[in-house]
Every structure is written in structure tokens, then in C-alpha cells.
Image (cartoon, one colour):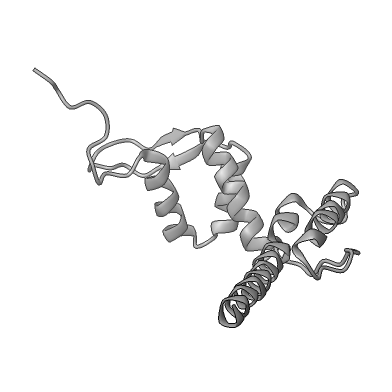
Length: 148
């Protein structure tokens, strides 16, 4: 016989329930997130009538998640900022290798973050240049076929 162990589907865990309750009662999510991030025990509301209030210590994953939420709330859009660094001119697909090298150099110097390096428009420009190259090749083949 397989008995169901653990939390039933749809029932929040104690930390989630405590978080929701405290946010609703205190209306101070920043303090609560700070407490969770710091690993402070969080008091839980009784799930049933007559149960005692208990305290739950957040897990490392919950603490890291709370820290991320705090950053998002306190420093909105911290991941997006204008970046400037030198890249060689990009006119053909052959110019991509030096341009990618310039991005890597800027990242290694700390001028841009790895996620900024990834998000730089080089991929879009590569696709554009590649499309232009393909159009030119197709046109040349069509011209050759038409004259030939």
C-alpha cells in the first residue's frame, strides 16, 4: 500500500504560507525578504485552528531567491544599462571574429558583464550581414543563370 507522504498538491509549504501571511499582515515585503535572505526564522501561522505558531528557517535556495527579489525591488532594471566599448567596423561576416574578440576583451576588463556581452547586438548584426551576403550570392547566381 502506497501512502501519500509529504505535502498534498496545492497546499503551500510552511515558508510560502508564512511569507504570504506576513506580507498580508505586515504589508512590509522588504523587511520580510531581508529576514528570509539573512536566514532569520520566520513565524508561521497555524494552518489549522488550535495549532501553535511555529518558526521555519529558510533554506539556502529560499535565501538566494529572496536576495534576488530584493535586488529586483531595490535596484530595478539593474541588469540593463547603457554600455560602450570599442569594436572594429563590421561590414562582412569575416569582420565578426575581431568584433567578438573586442567583446571578450571588454568583458575580461570588466567594462561589461558576461550577460551584457551575450546581449550585445553582434548576433543581430551577424544575421543581418549573413542575410546580405546570401542575397548577394543568390543575385549573382540568378544573374549568371539568366545570362547563361
